[in-house]
Amino acid sequence: MKHGDKHRRFNMPKSQRRALFSNLTNALFTHEQITITLPRAKELRTFADSMITFAKKGDLNSRRMALAFLRDNEVVAKLFSTLAERYKNRNGGYTRVLKAGIRYGDAAPMAVIELVDRDVNAKGAKDLARVAAEKAAAEAAEKGENVETPKDEKTK
Image 1: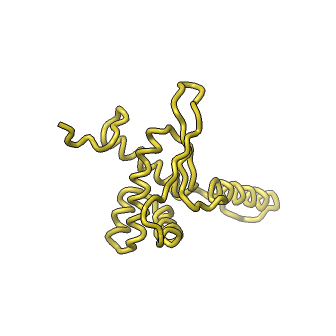
Image 2 (image 1 turned 120 degrees about the vertical axis):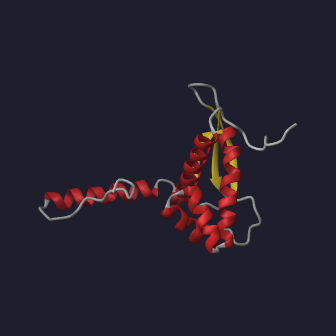
């Protein structure tokens, strides 16, 4: 019988698989385009689409369910504000999977998964902002000004 065979197992326990897809979904919503293996990209579609569906509902319970899965306040805020507004008239199909060839090291099929109607400037924007803030803090430190260096929210 095929009871409970809905999702791929990826040779890992359920908790590890849940953490993997939570982190991949966070990365997808942050950068709006990521490159991963093809089976993972196909499985990630279901998680990303369900999170966007929660965001389109917009009620408190949906926000709590999204926060329980994603575990990142910034990503949930972006999801419920910008992404929900972007996809309010679309009935599903929020992600696109494009095949991206074969990985050299182990010949794994690679794919690019991206949000439909994505913001091209979102990819790497968080990293660029962090680098710019660190550069400004370093310049201020050279001038002798008392400025605190920016830190990640997770390292505090």
